[in-house]
Image (cartoon, rainbow, N blue to C red; front, side):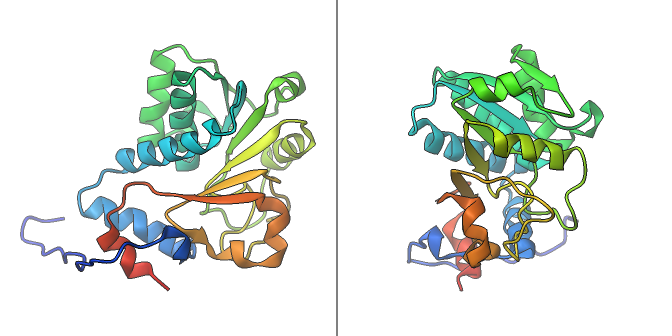
Length: 235
């Protein structure tokens, strides 16, 4: 943005918005992040806040061992933050990344580099190890986020099948991987979560009856976006 550009300030509000009141479609999810960044809140801070909020919800379940599964995008970045904070809470954590190393960019790459610098248990994979799935109390699903459209492509259908066949409980980050954000239907296949943490507000597709079997118990967590901005998205 040029030095002479005028940035419109968000309106002031005296009311506290309950985030469960927000129902966001795919474009609105993007807009919340973009507007927060434009107003000076860096994306890496939003990712850190999302990961902390998700970690707090999972720690309340008293996990002993967690298998964190990450994709190449920001959803995977939230998973890296979770892995760091879960470890700080004394939880045994393994990180498996379903992507190529060069695919990890931006804020996600920053958080992955932190884990690599501290010698976390990280592997890049195209399929899951059945023994690792079976030995974990929980699987964190941070593979595919709200931006996915069209049919889920390999290797993700096979990985999703392995997650759903695992005896571990499943914690989905923002949305169960493979579920359409707006329609609430699987894009060929979708993770069946025991708990889903949705950031900022609920997703539009979560309201659809067909989404219920994939969502499990749904919680909403904040990412540090100011109330003044969120009130723009009140239904």
